[in-house]
Length: 204
Image (cartoon, rainbow, N blue to C red; front, side, top):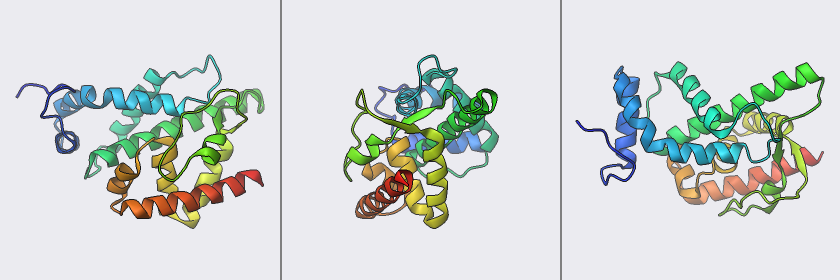
């Protein structure tokens, strides 16, 4: 079978899911066919994760995508149900990679040169939209946000996943609902509640 391309009308959410499950089932060539179909979206996701990083960060968006794929290969036995689930996984892997790099750098520099991430985006985002990161804003530590998100996940796992998918992954309300198997209304409600909790936690 010829490889699909991103502009091919056969490229659908179901075809991406099928390739993921074929790869999980041992068909290595399925991943080779998948990569060009999702690479542009993953680059945009990586750029979103990197939006608050300092200049000259050891990782750039392309390298972040590649490292996320390497980590994905270590979790091959996942049962893939949707395209949105895949992008949610990749977003989580990208965040963990950046956090690992931040912790390593902080350990070597005793806390200087932190990886940073916008907190104003949380304040300005509505339940339906996540605006692009503006320039000249105040910044907060990615590590602080990561730790707060871990605390939120302990309190409410679904709210934690909504923040992961919406804030870090850039998924729409509908895509987040698909990934979590809930309604769009539920995602909007959980996102509003989780965002308010995180802002209070970070302000404290």
